[in-house]
Amino acid sequence: VNNEMQWMNIAVGYAPDNWIPGVRVGYRENLVGSQLSMATFGITLLKGLNLDIAYGLEEIESDGEKYPRSVAVNLGLEMRF
Image: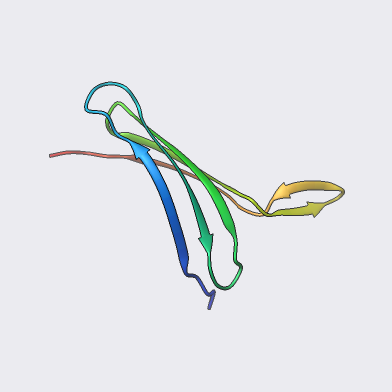
């Protein structure tokens, strides 16, 4: 446990008032500890279904292949009442 984290985020997005999907892009970086950085992208469909993806900008090598050090996917549902 005891992981040091201090995330800095910057993002820009577009959220229309009609059926056109909302989109957002951004960048996040852990300023302490692992100091990982990620590019982020998200889309909102039907004014309530959110899909967000974060892709690490650092790489690791395993068996001669390169992979991103971090990847995250989030699917969320907004409910208004």
